[in-house]
Length: 575
Image (cartoon, rainbow, N blue to C red; front, side, top):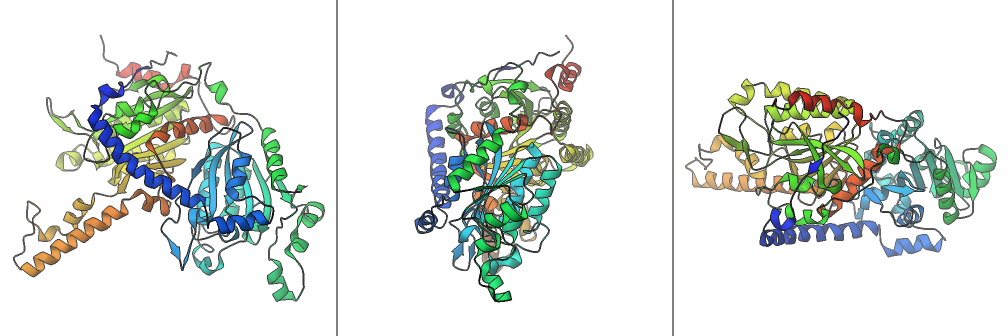
Protein backbone atom coordinates (compact mmCIF):
# COMPACT_ATOMS: atom_id res chain seq x y z
CA UNK A 1 0.00 0.00 0.00
CA UNK A 2 2.79 2.46 0.82
CA UNK A 3 4.32 2.03 -2.62
CA UNK A 4 3.74 5.08 -4.83
CA UNK A 5 3.59 3.67 -8.37
CA UNK A 6 5.52 6.39 -10.17
CA UNK A 7 6.10 5.51 -13.82
CA UNK A 8 7.99 7.28 -16.62
CA UNK A 9 6.14 10.06 -18.42
CA UNK A 10 6.87 11.93 -21.63
CA UNK A 11 9.17 11.51 -24.59
CA UNK A 12 12.45 13.00 -25.82
CA UNK A 13 11.71 16.30 -27.48
CA UNK A 14 12.55 15.08 -30.98
CA UNK A 15 9.94 12.34 -30.55
CA UNK A 16 7.37 14.57 -28.90
CA UNK A 17 7.40 17.10 -31.74
CA UNK A 18 9.00 17.43 -35.13
CA UNK A 19 12.02 19.79 -35.10
CA UNK A 20 10.54 22.37 -37.47
CA UNK A 21 7.36 22.77 -35.43
CA UNK A 22 9.37 22.92 -32.21
CA UNK A 23 11.64 25.64 -33.62
CA UNK A 24 8.71 27.66 -34.95
CA UNK A 25 6.85 27.50 -31.65
CA UNK A 26 9.98 28.29 -29.66
CA UNK A 27 10.62 31.37 -31.81
CA UNK A 28 7.07 32.61 -31.26
CA UNK A 29 7.35 32.15 -27.49
CA UNK A 30 10.84 33.71 -27.44
CA UNK A 31 9.46 36.92 -28.94
CA UNK A 32 6.86 37.20 -26.19
CA UNK A 33 9.38 36.37 -23.48
CA UNK A 34 11.77 39.03 -24.77
CA UNK A 35 8.99 41.55 -24.13
CA UNK A 36 8.60 40.06 -20.63
CA UNK A 37 12.33 40.51 -19.96
CA UNK A 38 12.26 44.12 -21.14
CA UNK A 39 9.27 44.97 -18.99
CA UNK A 40 10.75 43.26 -15.93
CA UNK A 41 13.93 45.29 -16.36
CA UNK A 42 12.00 48.55 -16.60
CA UNK A 43 10.05 47.75 -13.42
CA UNK A 44 13.24 46.83 -11.55
CA UNK A 45 14.65 50.29 -12.31
CA UNK A 46 11.87 52.00 -10.35
CA UNK A 47 11.93 55.67 -11.22
CA UNK A 48 15.39 55.30 -12.71
CA UNK A 49 19.06 55.95 -12.05
CA UNK A 50 18.50 59.52 -10.84
CA UNK A 51 16.41 58.30 -7.91
CA UNK A 52 18.71 55.38 -7.16
CA UNK A 53 21.59 57.86 -7.00
CA UNK A 54 19.64 59.93 -4.46
CA UNK A 55 19.28 56.84 -2.27
CA UNK A 56 23.00 56.04 -2.58
CA UNK A 57 23.90 59.65 -1.73
CA UNK A 58 22.33 59.06 1.68
CA UNK A 59 24.56 56.00 2.17
CA UNK A 60 21.53 53.77 1.80
CA UNK A 61 20.73 50.83 -0.46
CA UNK A 62 17.81 50.61 -2.86
CA UNK A 63 15.11 48.08 -2.00
CA UNK A 64 16.21 45.52 -4.55
CA UNK A 65 19.84 45.91 -3.40
CA UNK A 66 18.67 45.17 0.14
CA UNK A 67 16.85 42.04 -1.03
CA UNK A 68 19.90 40.87 -2.96
CA UNK A 69 22.08 41.18 0.15
CA UNK A 70 19.47 39.57 2.38
CA UNK A 71 19.12 36.48 0.18
CA UNK A 72 21.33 33.43 0.60
CA UNK A 73 24.19 33.51 -1.88
CA UNK A 74 23.43 31.71 -5.11
CA UNK A 75 19.68 31.48 -4.53
CA UNK A 76 16.96 32.85 -6.77
CA UNK A 77 14.54 35.57 -5.72
CA UNK A 78 10.96 34.87 -6.83
CA UNK A 79 9.18 38.20 -7.17
CA UNK A 80 5.37 38.32 -7.17
CA UNK A 81 3.28 41.28 -8.24
CA UNK A 82 5.93 42.66 -10.60
CA UNK A 83 3.34 44.14 -12.95
CA UNK A 84 0.84 45.60 -10.49
CA UNK A 85 -0.20 49.02 -11.89
CA UNK A 86 1.46 48.18 -15.23
CA UNK A 87 0.30 50.67 -17.84
CA UNK A 88 -1.50 52.83 -15.26
CA UNK A 89 -0.69 56.54 -14.95
CA UNK A 90 -1.37 58.89 -12.06
CA UNK A 91 -1.24 62.23 -13.79
CA UNK A 92 2.24 62.26 -15.29
CA UNK A 93 3.55 59.69 -12.83
CA UNK A 94 3.77 55.89 -12.88
CA UNK A 95 4.15 53.52 -9.94
CA UNK A 96 6.18 50.53 -11.18
CA UNK A 97 5.24 47.43 -9.19
CA UNK A 98 2.95 49.72 -7.16
CA UNK A 99 6.04 51.04 -5.38
CA UNK A 100 6.69 47.89 -3.36
CA UNK A 101 8.70 44.72 -3.97
CA UNK A 102 7.18 41.46 -2.71
CA UNK A 103 9.18 38.29 -3.17
CA UNK A 104 9.92 34.81 -1.91
CA UNK A 105 13.51 35.03 -0.68
CA UNK A 106 15.64 32.29 0.87
CA UNK A 107 17.27 33.68 4.02
CA UNK A 108 19.51 31.56 6.25
CA UNK A 109 18.26 28.42 4.42
CA UNK A 110 14.61 29.26 5.11
CA UNK A 111 12.09 30.61 2.64
CA UNK A 112 10.62 33.96 3.67
CA UNK A 113 8.19 36.44 2.18
CA UNK A 114 9.96 39.80 1.88
CA UNK A 115 7.95 43.00 1.57
CA UNK A 116 10.15 46.00 0.71
CA UNK A 117 9.02 49.55 -0.07
CA UNK A 118 10.69 50.75 -3.28
CA UNK A 119 12.57 53.82 -2.06
CA UNK A 120 13.26 54.95 -5.63
CA UNK A 121 9.51 55.47 -6.25
CA UNK A 122 8.18 58.49 -4.36
CA UNK A 123 10.19 57.53 -1.26
CA UNK A 124 8.37 54.20 -0.92
CA UNK A 125 4.88 55.73 -0.89
CA UNK A 126 1.72 53.65 -1.03
CA UNK A 127 -0.18 54.05 -4.30
CA UNK A 128 -3.53 52.64 -5.35
CA UNK A 129 -3.15 48.83 -5.14
CA UNK A 130 0.01 49.05 -3.00
CA UNK A 131 -1.92 48.00 0.12
CA UNK A 132 -3.62 45.13 -1.72
CA UNK A 133 -0.26 43.94 -3.02
CA UNK A 134 1.26 43.99 0.48
CA UNK A 135 -1.78 42.19 1.88
CA UNK A 136 -1.57 39.54 -0.85
CA UNK A 137 2.05 38.86 0.11
CA UNK A 138 1.12 38.71 3.79
CA UNK A 139 -1.60 36.19 2.96
CA UNK A 140 0.93 34.02 1.10
CA UNK A 141 3.16 34.02 4.19
CA UNK A 142 0.22 33.17 6.42
CA UNK A 143 -1.06 30.32 4.24
CA UNK A 144 2.39 28.74 4.03
CA UNK A 145 3.47 29.54 7.58
CA UNK A 146 6.75 31.09 6.40
CA UNK A 147 8.34 34.19 8.03
CA UNK A 148 7.35 37.64 6.80
CA UNK A 149 10.24 40.11 6.55
CA UNK A 150 9.47 43.81 6.15
CA UNK A 151 12.11 46.17 4.75
CA UNK A 152 10.41 49.44 5.61
CA UNK A 153 11.31 52.73 3.94
CA UNK A 154 7.90 54.30 3.46
CA UNK A 155 6.72 57.92 3.50
CA UNK A 156 3.07 56.87 3.86
CA UNK A 157 0.25 57.25 1.35
CA UNK A 158 0.85 58.97 -1.97
CA UNK A 159 -1.51 61.73 -0.92
CA UNK A 160 -2.80 62.90 -4.34
CA UNK A 161 -4.33 59.41 -4.76
CA UNK A 162 -5.31 58.83 -1.12
CA UNK A 163 -9.01 58.31 -1.92
CA UNK A 164 -8.12 55.17 -3.89
CA UNK A 165 -5.86 53.57 -1.28
CA UNK A 166 -7.03 54.77 2.15
CA UNK A 167 -10.66 53.98 2.97
CA UNK A 168 -11.75 50.63 1.49
CA UNK A 169 -11.98 47.14 2.96
CA UNK A 170 -8.55 46.31 1.54
CA UNK A 171 -7.18 49.83 1.92
CA UNK A 172 -3.99 50.74 3.74
CA UNK A 173 -5.37 50.02 7.21
CA UNK A 174 -6.03 46.39 6.28
CA UNK A 175 -2.25 45.84 6.19
CA UNK A 176 -2.18 46.17 9.97
CA UNK A 177 -5.06 43.72 10.35
CA UNK A 178 -2.96 41.26 8.33
CA UNK A 179 -0.01 41.98 10.67
CA UNK A 180 -2.26 40.99 13.56
CA UNK A 181 -3.54 37.85 11.78
CA UNK A 182 0.01 36.69 11.09
CA UNK A 183 0.90 37.25 14.73
CA UNK A 184 -2.20 35.36 15.89
CA UNK A 185 -1.32 32.49 13.55
CA UNK A 186 2.19 32.27 15.01
CA UNK A 187 3.88 33.31 11.78
CA UNK A 188 7.20 35.07 12.55
CA UNK A 189 7.43 38.72 11.48
CA UNK A 190 10.72 40.62 11.38
CA UNK A 191 11.07 44.27 10.37
CA UNK A 192 14.00 46.41 9.38
CA UNK A 193 13.31 50.16 9.36
CA UNK A 194 15.71 51.94 7.03
CA UNK A 195 14.43 55.48 6.59
CA UNK A 196 11.10 57.23 6.27
CA UNK A 197 8.39 55.44 8.22
CA UNK A 198 5.49 57.88 8.36
CA UNK A 199 1.81 57.42 9.27
CA UNK A 200 0.78 53.97 7.99
CA UNK A 201 4.42 53.24 7.29
CA UNK A 202 5.03 53.85 10.99
CA UNK A 203 2.38 51.37 12.05
CA UNK A 204 3.53 48.61 9.72
CA UNK A 205 6.57 47.32 11.68
CA UNK A 206 5.14 47.62 15.19
CA UNK A 207 3.41 44.24 15.48
CA UNK A 208 6.53 42.46 14.19
CA UNK A 209 8.33 40.17 16.63
CA UNK A 210 11.67 41.93 16.04
CA UNK A 211 12.22 45.51 14.87
CA UNK A 212 15.65 46.82 13.83
CA UNK A 213 16.22 50.54 13.17
CA UNK A 214 19.15 52.14 11.40
CA UNK A 215 20.52 55.52 12.45
CA UNK A 216 18.74 57.13 9.48
CA UNK A 217 15.37 55.58 10.33
CA UNK A 218 12.38 57.05 12.08
CA UNK A 219 8.84 55.89 12.81
CA UNK A 220 6.27 58.66 13.32
CA UNK A 221 2.52 59.08 13.21
CA UNK A 222 3.15 62.50 11.68
CA UNK A 223 6.39 63.86 10.25
CA UNK A 224 8.23 67.04 11.19
CA UNK A 225 6.62 69.14 8.47
CA UNK A 226 3.11 68.34 9.67
CA UNK A 227 3.99 68.94 13.33
CA UNK A 228 5.63 72.24 12.45
CA UNK A 229 2.43 73.32 10.71
CA UNK A 230 0.08 72.06 13.41
CA UNK A 231 2.03 72.92 16.56
CA UNK A 232 4.66 75.44 15.40
CA UNK A 233 7.44 73.21 16.73
CA UNK A 234 10.76 73.07 14.90
CA UNK A 235 11.84 69.43 15.07
CA UNK A 236 13.30 66.86 12.72
CA UNK A 237 11.57 63.54 12.13
CA UNK A 238 14.59 61.83 13.75
CA UNK A 239 14.00 63.96 16.86
CA UNK A 240 10.37 62.87 16.93
CA UNK A 241 10.69 59.16 16.25
CA UNK A 242 14.28 58.09 15.54
CA UNK A 243 16.06 55.12 17.12
CA UNK A 244 16.94 57.18 20.22
CA UNK A 245 13.21 57.49 20.89
CA UNK A 246 11.88 54.09 19.82
CA UNK A 247 14.72 51.80 20.90
CA UNK A 248 15.65 53.52 24.15
CA UNK A 249 12.41 55.22 25.26
CA UNK A 250 9.14 53.96 23.73
CA UNK A 251 10.20 50.34 23.22
CA UNK A 252 8.51 50.28 19.80
CA UNK A 253 11.75 48.94 18.28
CA UNK A 254 14.21 46.42 19.62
CA UNK A 255 17.68 47.03 18.23
CA UNK A 256 19.57 50.07 16.96
CA UNK A 257 22.08 49.46 14.14
CA UNK A 258 24.35 51.84 12.27
CA UNK A 259 23.40 51.19 8.65
CA UNK A 260 21.59 49.09 6.03
CA UNK A 261 24.22 46.36 5.81
CA UNK A 262 24.25 45.81 9.56
CA UNK A 263 20.43 45.71 9.69
CA UNK A 264 20.28 43.11 6.93
CA UNK A 265 22.87 40.93 8.65
CA UNK A 266 20.89 41.22 11.90
CA UNK A 267 17.73 40.10 10.09
CA UNK A 268 19.60 37.12 8.62
CA UNK A 269 20.78 36.13 12.08
CA UNK A 270 17.26 36.46 13.46
CA UNK A 271 15.79 34.24 10.74
CA UNK A 272 18.53 31.68 11.46
CA UNK A 273 17.15 31.31 15.00
CA UNK A 274 13.82 30.00 13.66
CA UNK A 275 13.11 26.29 13.12
CA UNK A 276 14.65 25.04 9.90
CA UNK A 277 12.62 23.62 7.02
CA UNK A 278 10.67 20.39 7.41
CA UNK A 279 11.14 19.62 3.71
CA UNK A 280 14.05 17.23 4.23
CA UNK A 281 11.99 15.18 6.71
CA UNK A 282 9.05 14.96 4.29
CA UNK A 283 11.26 13.69 1.44
CA UNK A 284 11.21 10.32 3.23
CA UNK A 285 14.82 9.65 2.32
CA UNK A 286 14.43 10.57 -1.37
CA UNK A 287 16.96 12.87 -3.02
CA UNK A 288 15.79 15.90 -4.97
CA UNK A 289 16.11 15.18 -8.70
CA UNK A 290 15.69 17.17 -11.89
CA UNK A 291 13.18 16.07 -14.54
CA UNK A 292 14.61 13.52 -16.97
CA UNK A 293 13.26 15.70 -19.79
CA UNK A 294 14.61 19.26 -19.70
CA UNK A 295 12.16 21.91 -18.45
CA UNK A 296 13.70 24.39 -20.93
CA UNK A 297 12.02 22.40 -23.71
CA UNK A 298 8.62 23.72 -22.63
CA UNK A 299 9.37 26.85 -24.65
CA UNK A 300 8.96 24.92 -27.89
CA UNK A 301 6.41 22.33 -26.76
CA UNK A 302 3.55 24.75 -26.04
CA UNK A 303 2.08 26.41 -29.13
CA UNK A 304 1.47 30.13 -28.86
CA UNK A 305 -1.68 29.68 -30.95
CA UNK A 306 -4.35 28.64 -28.45
CA UNK A 307 -6.20 26.70 -31.17
CA UNK A 308 -3.30 24.26 -31.58
CA UNK A 309 -3.21 21.34 -29.16
CA UNK A 310 -0.29 19.63 -27.41
CA UNK A 311 0.20 16.71 -25.02
CA UNK A 312 -0.10 17.78 -21.41
CA UNK A 313 1.89 14.66 -20.45
CA UNK A 314 4.93 16.25 -22.10
CA UNK A 315 4.50 19.31 -19.88
CA UNK A 316 4.22 17.25 -16.70
CA UNK A 317 7.27 15.23 -17.74
CA UNK A 318 9.29 18.45 -17.64
CA UNK A 319 8.02 19.53 -14.23
CA UNK A 320 8.29 16.45 -11.99
CA UNK A 321 11.41 14.72 -10.66
CA UNK A 322 12.92 12.16 -13.05
CA UNK A 323 9.81 12.63 -15.24
CA UNK A 324 8.04 10.04 -13.08
CA UNK A 325 4.32 10.29 -12.34
CA UNK A 326 1.48 8.31 -10.78
CA UNK A 327 -1.69 8.97 -12.78
CA UNK A 328 -4.81 8.42 -10.68
CA UNK A 329 -8.13 7.36 -12.26
CA UNK A 330 -6.57 7.15 -15.73
CA UNK A 331 -9.64 5.52 -17.33
CA UNK A 332 -12.15 8.15 -16.28
CA UNK A 333 -12.69 11.76 -17.37
CA UNK A 334 -10.16 11.76 -20.19
CA UNK A 335 -10.25 15.56 -20.52
CA UNK A 336 -8.43 15.75 -17.18
CA UNK A 337 -5.23 14.19 -15.92
CA UNK A 338 -4.65 14.01 -12.17
CA UNK A 339 -1.88 12.35 -10.20
CA UNK A 340 1.16 12.57 -7.99
CA UNK A 341 4.76 13.43 -8.76
CA UNK A 342 7.77 14.41 -6.71
CA UNK A 343 9.23 17.90 -6.96
CA UNK A 344 12.64 18.27 -5.31
CA UNK A 345 11.86 14.94 -3.67
CA UNK A 346 8.56 16.19 -2.20
CA UNK A 347 5.17 14.80 -3.17
CA UNK A 348 2.88 17.19 -5.04
CA UNK A 349 -0.53 16.60 -6.59
CA UNK A 350 -1.19 17.78 -10.14
CA UNK A 351 -4.44 18.42 -12.00
CA UNK A 352 -4.31 19.49 -15.64
CA UNK A 353 -6.48 19.83 -18.72
CA UNK A 354 -5.92 17.49 -21.65
CA UNK A 355 -6.55 18.92 -25.11
CA UNK A 356 -7.16 17.31 -28.48
CA UNK A 357 -9.86 14.70 -29.12
CA UNK A 358 -10.81 12.40 -26.26
CA UNK A 359 -13.06 9.35 -26.00
CA UNK A 360 -16.69 10.18 -25.21
CA UNK A 361 -17.61 8.29 -22.04
CA UNK A 362 -21.32 8.75 -22.79
CA UNK A 363 -21.33 7.48 -26.40
CA UNK A 364 -19.43 4.28 -27.27
CA UNK A 365 -16.92 4.78 -30.09
CA UNK A 366 -17.45 8.56 -30.26
CA UNK A 367 -14.97 11.33 -29.53
CA UNK A 368 -15.30 14.91 -28.32
CA UNK A 369 -12.97 17.89 -27.88
CA UNK A 370 -10.75 18.10 -24.82
CA UNK A 371 -9.94 21.27 -22.93
CA UNK A 372 -13.59 21.33 -21.79
CA UNK A 373 -14.93 20.08 -18.46
CA UNK A 374 -17.44 17.24 -18.73
CA UNK A 375 -19.23 15.34 -15.96
CA UNK A 376 -16.63 12.62 -15.41
CA UNK A 377 -13.72 15.01 -15.49
CA UNK A 378 -15.35 17.31 -12.94
CA UNK A 379 -16.11 14.37 -10.63
CA UNK A 380 -12.54 13.17 -11.06
CA UNK A 381 -11.15 16.59 -10.13
CA UNK A 382 -13.38 16.79 -7.06
CA UNK A 383 -12.45 13.32 -5.84
CA UNK A 384 -8.74 13.95 -6.34
CA UNK A 385 -8.93 17.39 -4.69
CA UNK A 386 -10.61 15.88 -1.63
CA UNK A 387 -8.12 13.03 -1.44
CA UNK A 388 -5.14 15.41 -1.60
CA UNK A 389 -6.75 17.52 1.10
CA UNK A 390 -7.29 14.45 3.28
CA UNK A 391 -3.72 13.28 2.73
CA UNK A 392 -2.10 16.71 3.18
CA UNK A 393 -0.63 16.78 -0.34
CA UNK A 394 -0.10 20.28 -1.84
CA UNK A 395 -1.68 20.71 -5.27
CA UNK A 396 -0.68 22.38 -8.52
CA UNK A 397 -3.39 23.10 -11.10
CA UNK A 398 -2.26 23.51 -14.71
CA UNK A 399 -4.98 25.30 -16.63
CA UNK A 400 -5.62 25.27 -20.35
CA UNK A 401 -9.39 25.23 -20.20
CA UNK A 402 -12.11 26.51 -22.53
CA UNK A 403 -14.91 26.18 -19.98
CA UNK A 404 -17.71 23.77 -19.09
CA UNK A 405 -19.67 21.59 -21.47
CA UNK A 406 -22.97 23.18 -22.46
CA UNK A 407 -26.24 22.05 -23.99
CA UNK A 408 -29.19 19.78 -23.29
CA UNK A 409 -27.13 16.73 -22.35
CA UNK A 410 -24.87 18.72 -19.99
CA UNK A 411 -27.91 19.99 -18.11
CA UNK A 412 -29.60 16.57 -18.10
CA UNK A 413 -26.64 14.87 -16.39
CA UNK A 414 -26.48 17.61 -13.75
CA UNK A 415 -23.25 19.37 -14.69
CA UNK A 416 -24.20 22.30 -12.45
CA UNK A 417 -24.37 19.99 -9.45
CA UNK A 418 -21.05 18.34 -10.19
CA UNK A 419 -19.50 21.79 -10.65
CA UNK A 420 -20.91 22.89 -7.30
CA UNK A 421 -19.29 19.90 -5.64
CA UNK A 422 -15.91 20.87 -7.10
CA UNK A 423 -16.42 24.48 -6.03
CA UNK A 424 -17.10 23.29 -2.48
CA UNK A 425 -13.99 21.09 -2.45
CA UNK A 426 -11.78 23.93 -3.67
CA UNK A 427 -13.37 26.52 -1.38
CA UNK A 428 -12.87 24.53 1.82
CA UNK A 429 -9.40 23.09 1.16
CA UNK A 430 -6.65 24.15 3.60
CA UNK A 431 -3.71 22.35 2.00
CA UNK A 432 -1.55 24.72 -0.10
CA UNK A 433 -2.86 25.13 -3.63
CA UNK A 434 -1.05 26.74 -6.55
CA UNK A 435 -2.42 27.54 -10.01
CA UNK A 436 -0.63 28.00 -13.33
CA UNK A 437 -2.51 29.42 -16.32
CA UNK A 438 -0.62 27.79 -19.18
CA UNK A 439 -2.74 29.23 -21.99
CA UNK A 440 -6.55 29.47 -21.96
CA UNK A 441 -8.33 30.25 -18.70
CA UNK A 442 -11.88 30.68 -19.88
CA UNK A 443 -15.34 30.88 -18.35
CA UNK A 444 -16.38 28.82 -15.36
CA UNK A 445 -13.57 26.40 -16.18
CA UNK A 446 -11.16 29.02 -14.83
CA UNK A 447 -13.09 29.01 -11.56
CA UNK A 448 -13.38 25.22 -11.37
CA UNK A 449 -9.65 24.73 -11.92
CA UNK A 450 -8.78 26.73 -8.78
CA UNK A 451 -8.49 30.14 -10.41
CA UNK A 452 -7.80 33.28 -8.38
CA UNK A 453 -11.36 33.62 -6.98
CA UNK A 454 -10.72 30.32 -5.15
CA UNK A 455 -7.65 31.77 -3.46
CA UNK A 456 -4.67 29.68 -4.51
CA UNK A 457 -1.57 30.65 -2.55
CA UNK A 458 -0.01 31.82 -5.82
CA UNK A 459 -1.42 32.05 -9.34
CA UNK A 460 1.02 32.31 -12.24
CA UNK A 461 0.43 33.26 -15.85
CA UNK A 462 2.70 32.67 -18.83
CA UNK A 463 3.17 35.01 -21.76
CA UNK A 464 0.66 32.77 -23.61
CA UNK A 465 -2.13 33.13 -21.05
CA UNK A 466 -5.57 34.28 -22.19
CA UNK A 467 -7.83 35.00 -19.19
CA UNK A 468 -11.46 35.89 -19.96
CA UNK A 469 -15.02 34.59 -19.91
CA UNK A 470 -14.79 33.75 -23.62
CA UNK A 471 -12.76 34.51 -26.73
CA UNK A 472 -13.19 37.90 -28.39
CA UNK A 473 -14.88 36.57 -31.51
CA UNK A 474 -17.28 34.41 -29.51
CA UNK A 475 -18.22 37.32 -27.27
CA UNK A 476 -18.77 39.61 -30.25
CA UNK A 477 -21.15 37.04 -31.75
CA UNK A 478 -23.01 36.77 -28.45
CA UNK A 479 -23.27 40.56 -28.11
CA UNK A 480 -24.68 41.02 -31.64
CA UNK A 481 -26.58 37.73 -31.82
CA UNK A 482 -29.95 39.29 -32.64
CA UNK A 483 -28.46 40.79 -35.80
CA UNK A 484 -26.89 37.55 -37.05
CA UNK A 485 -28.25 34.52 -38.88
CA UNK A 486 -27.68 30.85 -38.01
CA UNK A 487 -24.26 30.99 -39.71
CA UNK A 488 -23.31 34.03 -37.61
CA UNK A 489 -23.41 36.28 -40.64
CA UNK A 490 -24.93 39.78 -40.43
CA UNK A 491 -28.58 39.42 -41.43
CA UNK A 492 -29.77 43.06 -41.72
CA UNK A 493 -30.41 44.47 -45.19
CA UNK A 494 -29.57 48.14 -44.62
CA UNK A 495 -25.92 48.61 -45.76
CA UNK A 496 -25.23 51.39 -43.25
CA UNK A 497 -26.62 49.34 -40.34
CA UNK A 498 -24.68 46.27 -41.53
CA UNK A 499 -21.46 48.31 -41.63
CA UNK A 500 -22.12 49.64 -38.13
CA UNK A 501 -22.70 46.10 -36.82
CA UNK A 502 -19.52 44.87 -38.50
CA UNK A 503 -17.53 47.73 -36.97
CA UNK A 504 -19.12 47.11 -33.58
CA UNK A 505 -18.27 43.41 -33.68
CA UNK A 506 -14.70 44.17 -34.68
CA UNK A 507 -14.29 46.74 -31.90
CA UNK A 508 -15.76 44.32 -29.34
CA UNK A 509 -13.44 41.54 -30.46
CA UNK A 510 -10.37 43.80 -30.32
CA UNK A 511 -11.29 45.13 -26.85
CA UNK A 512 -11.78 41.62 -25.46
CA UNK A 513 -8.52 40.44 -27.02
CA UNK A 514 -6.71 43.35 -25.33
CA UNK A 515 -8.38 42.52 -22.01
CA UNK A 516 -7.12 38.93 -22.29
CA UNK A 517 -3.51 40.10 -22.30
CA UNK A 518 -1.73 38.67 -19.21
CA UNK A 519 -0.20 42.08 -18.38
CA UNK A 520 -3.71 43.49 -18.04
CA UNK A 521 -4.56 40.76 -15.53
CA UNK A 522 -1.27 41.26 -13.67
CA UNK A 523 -1.75 45.03 -13.56
CA UNK A 524 -5.04 44.72 -11.69
CA UNK A 525 -3.87 41.79 -9.52
CA UNK A 526 -6.01 39.16 -11.26
CA UNK A 527 -2.86 37.06 -11.45
CA UNK A 528 0.21 37.18 -9.23
CA UNK A 529 3.09 36.95 -11.69
CA UNK A 530 3.94 36.39 -15.36
CA UNK A 531 6.71 33.84 -15.90
CA UNK A 532 8.66 32.30 -18.73
CA UNK A 533 7.81 28.70 -19.61
CA UNK A 534 11.34 27.56 -18.79
CA UNK A 535 10.91 29.08 -15.30
CA UNK A 536 7.93 26.89 -14.39
CA UNK A 537 9.96 24.05 -12.88
CA UNK A 538 11.82 26.48 -10.60
CA UNK A 539 8.54 28.01 -9.45
CA UNK A 540 7.01 24.60 -8.72
CA UNK A 541 10.16 23.72 -6.75
CA UNK A 542 9.47 26.87 -4.72
CA UNK A 543 5.86 25.78 -4.20
CA UNK A 544 6.98 22.39 -2.92
CA UNK A 545 9.70 23.73 -0.62
CA UNK A 546 7.49 26.41 0.92
CA UNK A 547 4.57 24.00 1.34
CA UNK A 548 6.66 21.58 3.38
CA UNK A 549 8.86 24.10 5.23
CA UNK A 550 6.61 24.79 8.21
CA UNK A 551 6.32 22.02 10.77
CA UNK A 552 3.24 23.33 12.55
CA UNK A 553 0.80 25.05 10.21
CA UNK A 554 -0.77 22.02 8.52
CA UNK A 555 -1.16 18.27 8.66
CA UNK A 556 0.94 16.08 6.36
CA UNK A 557 0.24 12.34 6.25
CA UNK A 558 2.96 9.84 5.52
CA UNK A 559 2.38 8.05 2.19
CA UNK A 560 1.60 4.77 3.92
CA UNK A 561 -1.84 5.97 4.98
CA UNK A 562 -2.91 8.02 1.97
CA UNK A 563 -6.56 7.70 1.02
CA UNK A 564 -5.34 7.85 -2.59
CA UNK A 565 -4.24 4.20 -2.22
CA UNK A 566 -7.81 3.20 -1.35
CA UNK A 567 -9.19 5.23 -4.24
CA UNK A 568 -6.83 3.52 -6.66
CA UNK A 569 -7.62 0.05 -5.26
CA UNK A 570 -11.37 0.54 -5.57
CA UNK A 571 -11.25 1.85 -9.14
CA UNK A 572 -8.64 -0.40 -10.74
CA UNK A 573 -10.18 -3.02 -13.07
CA UNK A 574 -10.61 -6.59 -11.79
CA UNK A 575 -8.37 -9.11 -13.50
